[in-house]
Amino acid sequence: MSARRRRPGVIALSLALIGAGGAGAAVLLLQVGDRTEVVTVVRDVQVGQVLTEGDLGTASIALDPAVKTVRSDDLDLVVGQRAAVELRPGSLLAPSQVTKDSLVKTGEQLVPIGLEPKQIPATALVPGQKVQLVQVPAQSAADTGQTPPAAPRTIAGRVVKASGAAPGTGIMVVDVATSAADGPTAAAWVAAGTLRLVLAAADGS
Image (cartoon, rainbow, N blue to C red; front, side, top):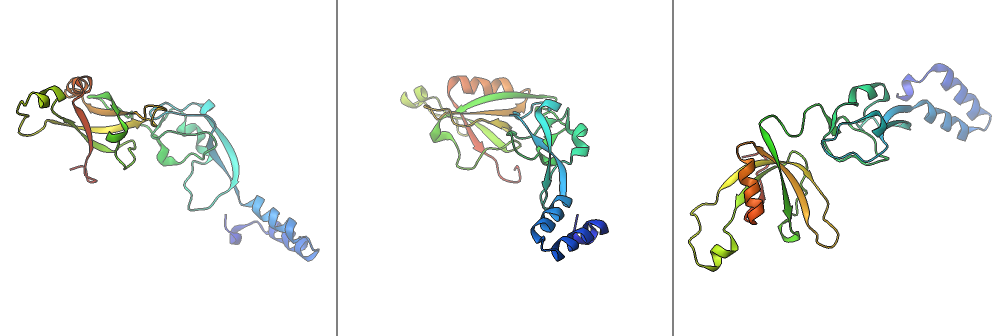
């Protein structure tokens, strides 16, 4: 709420406090009048997990209008939705962080892909990022001099979740959604060690 819209009684009391030498108390009073009840995250929530009342709380804060948050009045509306990103305790919940849609849609399958440190792109992998799964020649084929295919086979995919690098190994696991028809093929490439993940163009082309 802006200063122009504060209640006349609050403004009058603040002016009286200033006149009596209580400027600090007046500032505090005005700040209290500006506080907004918002929804907060109280425990870890993984990408795609359905939000429950136990995952969320509320807090009264002095909110900058530029900060997008879910107001406490809308708490019931976000319970039952899914986390679109990984949520951490102590953070404010933003509308863009929840979704009514399943992150793995009808007709899709989820393929987990382990990436070694040298295979992890410098660009952070985030939910919704479009990628290409590329089949590369097996090492044994390269060693025997077999002629690789003229063009590598590719499968279109979308990042659903990317873990942090595992301690010791540095391996990151990326869950990628593909079409149900391509899922088994991608899983076979992963098992054979012939799959590589490539970021798609920003426009998805």
